[in-house]
Image (cartoon, rainbow, N blue to C red; front, side, top):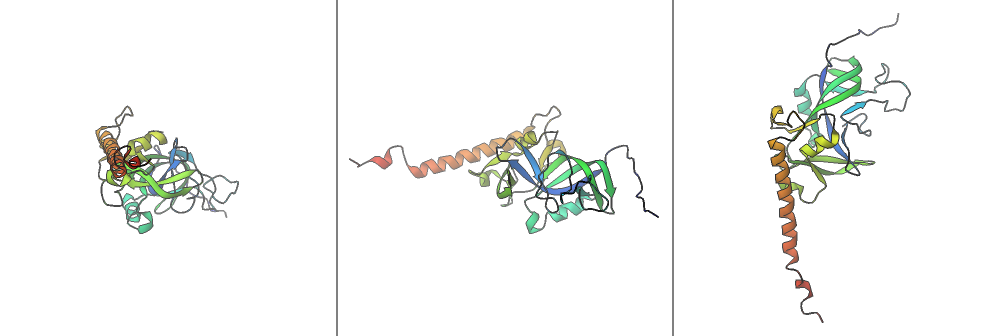
Length: 228
């Protein structure tokens, strides 16, 4: 007798939670995410379909395989993962589970997903994030990003939180961990006051850094005095 899994037909897509690393394409025109475990070598977009990480030709999620997107039901359990050293720079994603899925005790394995909200934690120094900056590692064609405050961004390749959301598209909302969900972009897609303040702080931090570098070089022409 063949065991058949129960069939569910929800009226709305189930909601799940996961962690991932934000990534920026090499040319800086696209944004997405990459997982922290199985399938981490395959960056995905805000709205994307899963594929078998083992290169098999079946559709994900296959019952006898581990392929497919993964998420859990409990947001608190996902937040606990962010306490570990290897996941401190990851962001928390709230996703809609789309397409076929397999339900487990703690979550789902599924075929298609939409990332609705990305919650960004503090900078490594503990200050609130204003941007996602080059984390110093990546995947082929993609730079991994980590939360950065205005003082720590300096000359690193970075993108403001609202800018990352625009590049990712599909209505993604990117919010700092301490900011309520309502503080995100406005209904018409324009950045709200918190996003504009963050971008202004990022620009000011970069200006301060460039002024410091210019001060070290001295006034124009100072290096050529006394030379015949």
